[in-house]
Image 1 (cartoon, rainbow, N blue to C red):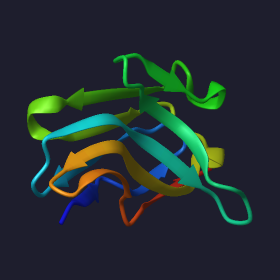
Image 2: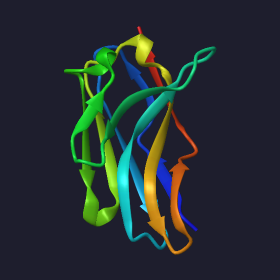
Image 3: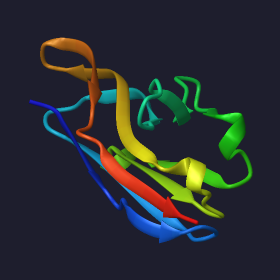
Image 4: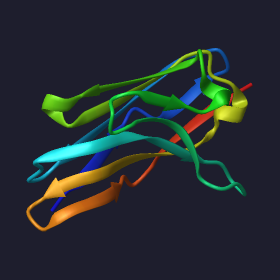
Length: 120
């Protein structure tokens, strides 16, 4: 069974930094894309940053220049370095893995979510 284990959320003042980590565990042969989404209270879940199957990375306009996504394929892990955080970045951040090739085929997975709170 595949699990996405997230860590690194917390409370930070505006202008501060946090680093989120997400490790996929289980019998995994390959992962097509990995990334982070977030959901603020009363809002829909939105893309923050994600790799594509071709290896490029997409960022939400609101985080470009402040957030950096990196991926360690050998460890099935993705990191999100968040700098210059703003109160509007406050949300639950969810790790996502798409096209995960496992024994039963190819599936998508979500992490349980980690809270990021930015105080003004």
